[in-house]
Length: 205
Length: 205
Image (cartoon, rainbow over all chains, first blue to last red; front, side, top):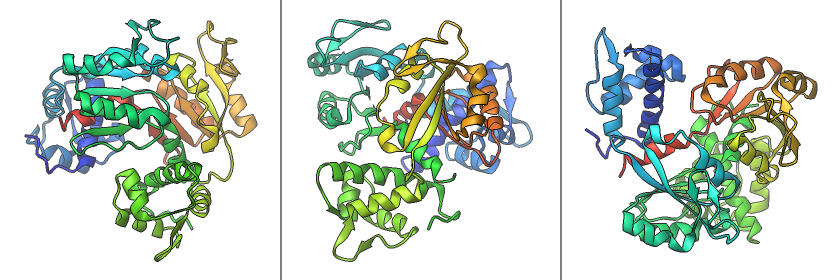
């Protein structure tokens, strides 16, 4: 029962729980506890129980959580009980690494097109994709009703491309460009900028 | 005046402020306000003022923030007034993209070695690096007193390699493997797992 009122920081932990539970399941485990899950993730068991209780009753006192059931429930809450088509913009080094990465499909996402503006790259093969002209991007997204995009392009072009994506119907953008995007309120953006993480850590050194 | 008591979520926003201020500075701006910075980042001006006030007085009422001064102060707080040597473990698609990425140096980090365990990759050139045997890793880290590592290896090997890194003296790990590492309390770990970000966004769709 997802509610608009669940704090975003709690929502952000659900994928972590899902990942840990999936790893446990792959190891053949069927039952876990908030203590075990917490030890695995470095999160307190009380926090995990509190987070999960926002969405319903998933465990019984004394018997713990049934792993396959909790996985299924988290997938439903996170809308991962379907496979999301994703467009990838940028076929440089990073875009190529992303296109080759085999780990998205098991977690709910399937890259369907890779775009670049560089005529040297258009038509080249990257993983199982033939790189398409970015001029084709808006038409494809509209036609195929794609909702999710990954941006692996230089920061200087990120805002302009994100505006095109939003106009075409994209409502979730994973931005690898080291910049902040300005998007309408109904559009989700998450950022991946490794330098931010490194700088966060050096504070503590 | 960094204090242990500053909440980690505040520390995590400082690199974002630094990035936005650096972009403004590159555009020739000298003065900004918490309002302008907030609009740029999608963070409230009150939040920014509160975050910065934990570390001292950086702006004057009515005149705003001097951008070069605030950049310098944030660099000092985040210990970026030096260049950190970094080892990269993993020379696959992702490791190669990371090794090619030119954006780390301006932000305080310099990759000095790239390692892999694959004999096909050892000795190959990746960017400006010759891939070294991971067997050499611990000796290099100890000898060169390196503190920061990036892990771009499969999840199955991440825990084992991180334990070797920690024994060698690494105290900050940026982990691209989609798993949680168990490390001693004095070791910082940050994770980059694009699927977590995608799953966080689909909740809201």
